[in-house]
Image 1 (cartoon, rainbow, N blue to C red):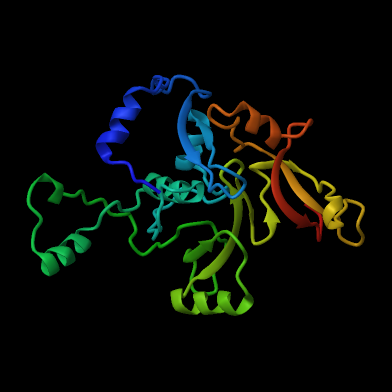
Image 2 (tube, rainbow, N blue to C red; image 1 turned 90 degrees about the vertical axis):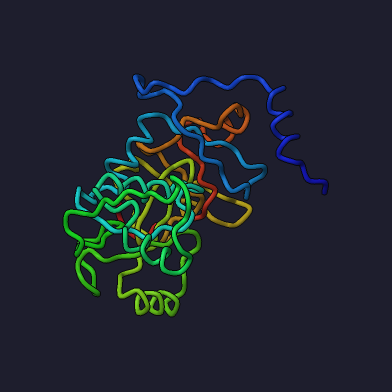
Amino acid sequence: MPLDTPASVIDRGRTLPSLPQVPDGSSADALSALIYTSGSTGLPKGAMYTERLVRQFWVDFVPGQGIRPSIALNYLPLSHMMGRGMLFGTLAKRGPRLLRGVQRSVDALRGPLPGPAHRVSSWFPASPTCSSSTTAPSCPAGPGRVAVHASAPPSAATTAFVEDCLHARLLDGYGSTEGGIVALDGRVLRLPVTDHKPADVPELGHFGTDSPHPRGELPIKSDRLVPGYFRRPDATTGVFDEDGFYRTGDIMARFGPD
């Protein structure tokens, strides 16, 4: 596959139609950010995050977390919804952006970097002993210290290994780019989820009438739902059902009350 040079990409971009101007933040429904899906269901699509949804990153990304200082280790924070939420939530709680200790270590190994790029800010939490990146009412390895993973649930052995290495409780997070955070440790979060239901998937033999546990696709309504995909009205229409539920595409079984 031929590769484009940076110059050719810039030249091609100049021929494209102009994009909407960055909103001034005066409207909660103004487009504020685009977070692209992984492409597991086709070409990546830009999920539209409004000003109101982006503000949730700063205020209450994981409901019930509260406002407290935090120290978070986050891998590739800007490439997905969960990463952005954790990063912005940490900064909102006065967590450190860059620690001088890191700068001193880099300087010792490589020598000072020339120019203004070497200057970094130092913003420490009010209580450096608090190390919390998500919500947890209690933690077997100490209050406030937790880790969270997403995607497919790990095995019990993997979970035990990670918790032993990190000395922290490992939470099983579930959500999506379009729907935000949906569940922790298999329990649906109400709020932000306001409603959910099992939808029949006949080709897999899953039905809402299954006993003892109803099964099917998990459609949800949530305060964190995006309004759709950027310049993709066709994809937006297909991802919501006739009652306004977002089709997650994931299979669930209900084991207890909400």
